[in-house]
Amino acid sequence: MPEIADIFRKYGPVYIERYGNRMPEFHREAIYDISNCRTEAMGSHVYVCEKCHKKVFHYHSCRNRHCPKCQGDRANKWREKQMKRLLPTVTYHLVTFTIPEEFRQIARSNQKLIYGILFRTSAAALKKLAADPRFIGGQIGMTGILHTWTRALLYHPHVHFIVPGGGYDEENEKWHFSNKKFLVPVKALSKIFRAKFRDEFRKTPFSKEISANVWGKDWVVHSKPVGSGKHALEYLSAYVYRVAITDKRIVRIQDDEVTFRYRESETGILKTQKLHSLEFIRRFLWHVLPPGFVKIRHFGFLSPVKTAVFQKAFQLLIGMLILFGMLPKGFVFPGCEIKSESIDQNHLRCKHCGGRLVLIEINKTGRGPPVPCLC
Image: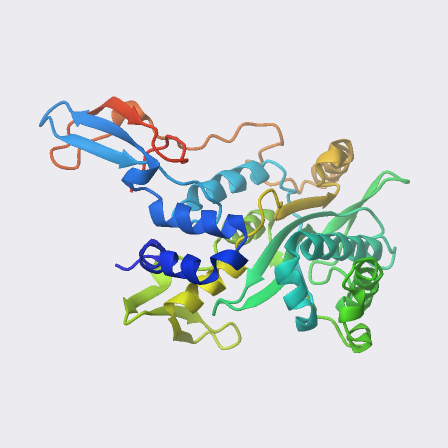
């Protein structure tokens, strides 16, 4: 089966030769890492089978956060960690903020700046409207994930927020539930978001590059209930460490062209698209984030600096549920350990005879950490 790594190995050097003087260094690193992930270039663990004496090489992962081979396990660990902070019986909501297309060229060239504004202003708009007693009347919690692509690999920056349906009224020390089918009015939310984004964007050097008409048009904001906290986390974890496109969507690499599958979001119809190999790499690199940029952020009572507020809100909610006999059976309280499966490197088995593999050597070639590939 063709892989994205095959595309980068074959055409990455051509892309660098053509565009290298205009490429940021982290794009070069992404090409190198994806091309060499789980190959000899990244080093390996070397095992020998006790039974048939065959040598087995497990090559190291690159651990680049944009590598399609390295993200699945990280997503699972993130989901397990967030499970400890789920609020029982609360309906969660998915709220999505999108910046207009007029900002996309500026955003691609100034990712940290524009994405930072997008995060701050969308969270501030949501917090402001939720504080209104007509809707929730309290401090809410939000987990936001930056997403920059469409299924056809086009550039489309937006933020998904998962929001528990309720808020903590710190002044009166009460927990307020939101409507299960409705969090806040999206039209009002859109206007507040637009105004806050405008105020911050006008402080940047690019304020004169955007037409005044943008501030008068409707901005796209969506909100919908997505069920329980567990269901919401399953949904959100798919976005947390997802890369722009995965190997399973690549159909073929032929005649300097890449054909891949995607499902049209509006109709759900499965389609294929063909791109020149260099255009495919260019679109992929649009979605490679700058080093150190945090694409997962927590706000409100889910913020790391609001741990005490979260604990108070949680205790009030649990107290209400116990009082009315609504606490779910088998509920795990925060702080209880959730065990995850781990690889015991002393009990790996030979795929040829089933014998036990014994580690005999570690080769630390390349920049990848010494983590064996077991796929």
